[in-house]
Image (tube, rainbow, N blue to C red; front, side):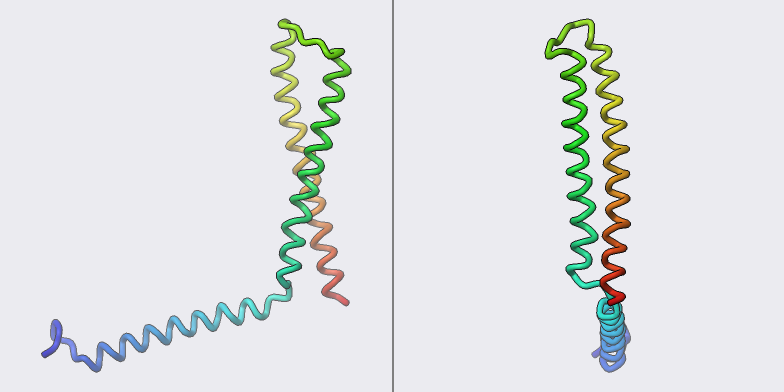
Length: 121
């Protein structure tokens, strides 16, 4: 009584072989994680520090831009400034993205340098 001409012992050997493959893959993944020199704190620092720095830079740039717009308009909105306002909005978006990307990149480098220095000790 075999299913589709296979012997039960041979099928069991195949299942055991597949389980050994899964086991070896899990062991490889565990060894990879254990050999990683960065701790969870290091990974959090590398994620959180650039994110907060970019958020703060974006907010500071937005406050700076709003101050410039208020000073330029004198607090008065007029219909003929709508086209200029759209162009200013586009310029704000481009400059804000550039400042945020620059600060994020610099803070990523800084956090990596901080972690590297910590690992050297």
